[in-house]
Image 1: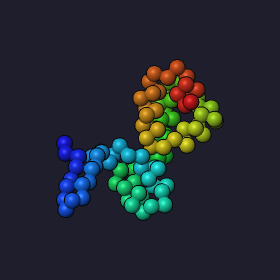
Image 2: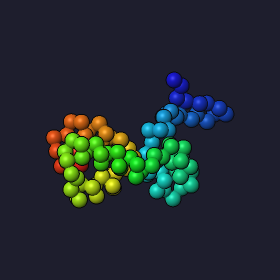
Image 3: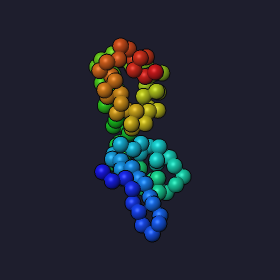
Image 4: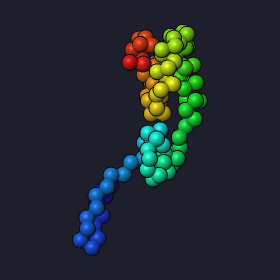
Length: 99
């Protein structure tokens, strides 16, 4: 894949990324309107829905979720919540999962 454009003596290098891999939550918090537009394009997931899905997975594996763990879960970004969906399979405890 090409990573450089040349024109009128001005070279431009770039790296192509899948926009769905960007952290839309972080971009949405930015003061830059361009970042906010990109956040929308990342197809931000419904944060509450993602948290609820992770909560159900954690409860199924470890039982009732203590208050401190629920607070940490709510504070996670969409990318971190997605990461938890895999890590919950191997974690030995809630503490290990949410550290």
